[in-house]
Image (cartoon, rainbow over all chains, first blue to last red):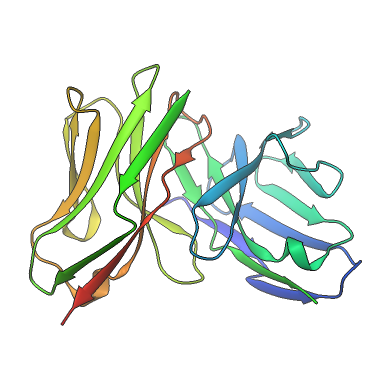
Length: 114
Length: 113
């Protein structure tokens, strides 16, 4: 079945540094990648949608300069949290879609900014 | 635009009892509906999905859901709860294939031994 590998599963970084999260589709080509953020005991909030080779479309209220998304190939998308601050601490999850087959989620990344 | 409402942020059932998790949707186009399960600190696993074929959808781990257009509902059921079913469950909707998913607020299922 379709598998999305997300790394790292957890990361601790210092305030002001940048963190990159990767999502790779292992056995299919992900035409569209979605990035979500989830606060403790809450639902998933869509941050942005990216299509391979195109600029990401950000949801209202999401800072595009802080959350940089790159989808350079059909198997790799990255989310970079720039100049991270403690309020950016959260659980980030990617999801890949492929034509007509639904959505496959990564295992998530727990980001803690200290 | 699409939205889903999950009634009951917490549901507790006894082991062996019926599980019923409620989801109502709103959509301006025929919807695609999904149920996902999430265990702590993990991603989402698809339980089942409705894509305009059969209205009764069978999923993994003994779960099933019925699409009822007249009630705009897509409730998730399982005849007999297991301890391993304890998790967070999310209902989600999209309006078109591969369009973004809109999630409900989730229901935490607790199984009582």
